[in-house]
Figure (cartoon, rainbow, N blue to C red):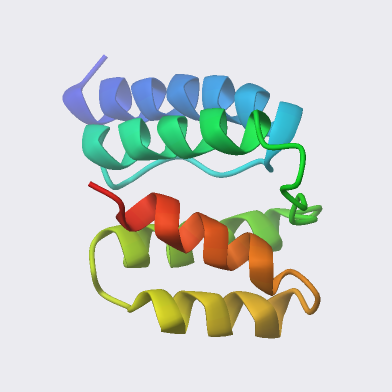
Length: 111
């Protein structure tokens, strides 16, 4: 197995584990390309919203929705977009979920 295949396999395994956790309380996602820091932050976010009975789960029912969400979340985490842009984009993509995106934005950008 070459290095690329090993990395791809590792990411696939991480995605499967993350998807299982996300499906329980938040949403499903795709393979993380952001690395361990983003993965750790998402794990923390997932744990937080799973414990929050007031969190309104965003309906990421298609692979396109999940990919969009993942890219937006990664862009926010990497400070490529602002919290305000993240919430605005999320509200446009998923009307009625502004509060969920606002909560996620706060969690994704907290130190």
